Length: 123
Image 1 (cartoon, helix red, strand yellow):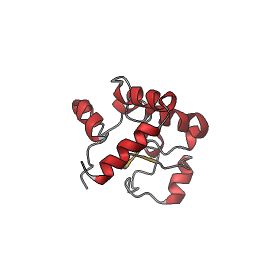
Image 2 (image 1 turned 60 degrees about the vertical axis):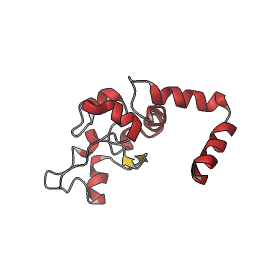
Image 3 (image 1 turned 135 degrees about the vertical axis):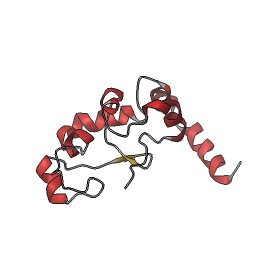
Image 4 (image 1 turned 90 degrees about the vertical axis):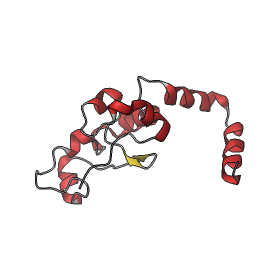
């Protein structure tokens, strides 16, 4: 094992299971998306300010979806863009993701192992 893996193992072992066990269960529940517990907290506190797909879909049709102008984001009500495991969060529940373009539903098991919730978007 690499030094990084050993360090990670030590860090995981020192986390109080009262806090880590719910996160581990959340990650293995097939009815939830990776990080859903965290996404729920974001929704609870930031709600409509999140730049989810539903909000981004209100951008002007000529907008570059992958790199929108900030003023146009603000006009849609979006104020918070955040990332989970290196990907922008475009949906916060499995039900919402199922209606989001590029959702990787056909290989959901792969999503759990790789963390890639969305397929790369062709430019």
